[in-house]
Image (cartoon, rainbow, N blue to C red; front, top):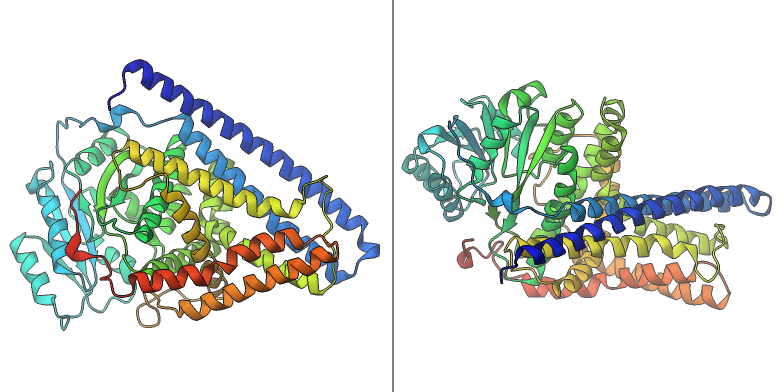
Length: 538
């Protein structure tokens, strides 16, 4: 149904009003958080004579975790407010009329690819609205020659007349092959594209147009979605991707600090050369590369239109391994780049925003770290010393704030995605989104802790790109821990303690981990990784 101009203006007014309200709320939460932090610190210090050293330390540690959750909520509401204040414009759908079509190189990293999927990607590039003679297509391949489909890869190289950059000795995963291929790039503009991503016809034209007209832009990132969404598990990751683009990327575009998503982005080759190419010391080379670029003062731009449609994992184990890779990579980037961000000559708000991005998985895991600390406090017979709030226990601020802000951002993402004609996501799916998130989030604690004590960079000889973990036994442990929290909450309630409500809330969230994991384990165990035979083109 098409809206007339008056209805569109009213909708835009409503969204902008909602955005302003979210901004005001973020400021209010920030001010309350500061008061809560300072007042609680004063009270804890004043209580040192009546508490042991261990009890004082536990109170400071749990307060720190709570404040981190509040600050995350502030940043998330700020991002949501910005994206709502500046709703998508119809002009984003216009097709630029290029006077010139400069050469562009497309690097597609592959490792043991499925030939049928790769064929679809190559076909989409060939059929795009960019002159074929201006496109240098490169397969950056480290597949061993004994791979059962290796001959088919060679046939595709010959059929589509593309360059095969082959180096089976590469052990630095995707980033390593990208760097090898970059040495053979023949153009000023480079596109990084995952091999399962079908590009939209105007992706290249729109990307090059922005780089030609905006000389300050180091790269442009287009929106990405999926074309094989057939289950609630796949809907969950689709919503998460929509959060990244519809909330975070659109908000960051106001300050030209968009994060590279790993695929469907076009870079200036000279900028990549100046910043040292693709970082290889982490699993999330895309985030690391973005920090390298932005901390040098360069800009990035977001194209508010879909540039490609990829494939989302169809099995629970593959989806979980992907989440673990992102969590490990983000924490590794945080360890390596926090000082570089601090020293960078960029605005303070941009520094805070970068810290926010690379610490997301740590913040997500902090809720469970807090639960562990609360249980220690229970057995240490330590009362929680905080700013007194009548009829509102302060400890529940952090988990409730995280859950509410997370769901609101998912709601905005789904609404905007549907405005972009992505109808596979529905508002009702937000319930599944929340439940699956509860099941997956505890595993990020494992990824965060492992990475905190890790010193070496990832490599194929010692690591797996898609790490397989025994998630059923681990989920049983998480659920048992959740049940223990609920039991302790009951006894703390009977003793008129201060921990019972937060232990109950966090315990119930963890108790759901095993049932949800078990359900999706049996639901997806026998499915093909990407439901390859049932792919629907966008």
